[in-house]
Length: 183
Image 1 (cartoon, rainbow, N blue to C red):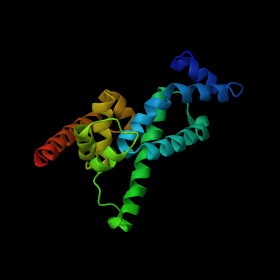
Image 2 (cartoon, one colour; image 1 turned 45 degrees about the vertical axis):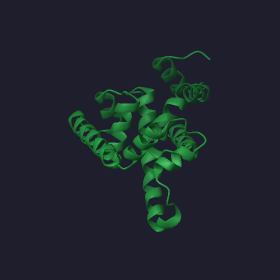
Image 3 (cartoon, rainbow, N blue to C red; image 1 turned 90 degrees about the vertical axis):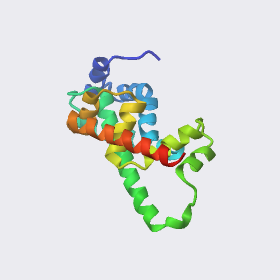
Image 4 (spheres, rainbow, N blue to C red; image 1 turned 90 degrees about the horizontal axis):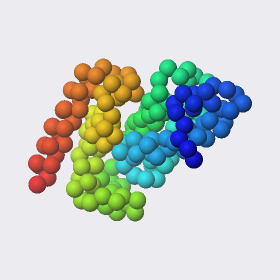
């Protein structure tokens, strides 16, 4: 399938006669990128798949509220990240109720995950990132893994670039500290 420009997709999505086909193309074009945004926040493949599906359903249901002011990927990323953060908040609540269920750290869980293809250092990095507060974790993931510009992250998260830069640098320091304490 050929990749359509943002403007072509917006035209398809704006017309009720082509909206469904346009959204199918959007899903094909952006699902993988959204999956990795989500996966870096929720960590496991199964959870990322569930959150992605929920985000795409929310995007479809909210299509009428998309006015085309931003790029489609920015709009979708905002939905996906918010869904990821909501999922993590719910997981944190469940984890608080059942603390003894898993003695395994995130790094060990990732190494045991069939879909995880990284090495132990990557697993430890994911554990360090997971230990960050949610805003720092999200900013770090978008900047470091996805190499997004601060201006794009600012549009997604609705925060000033200065605040994002501060969050990113604090996150980097905390990750360095994590690795130094685990040597």
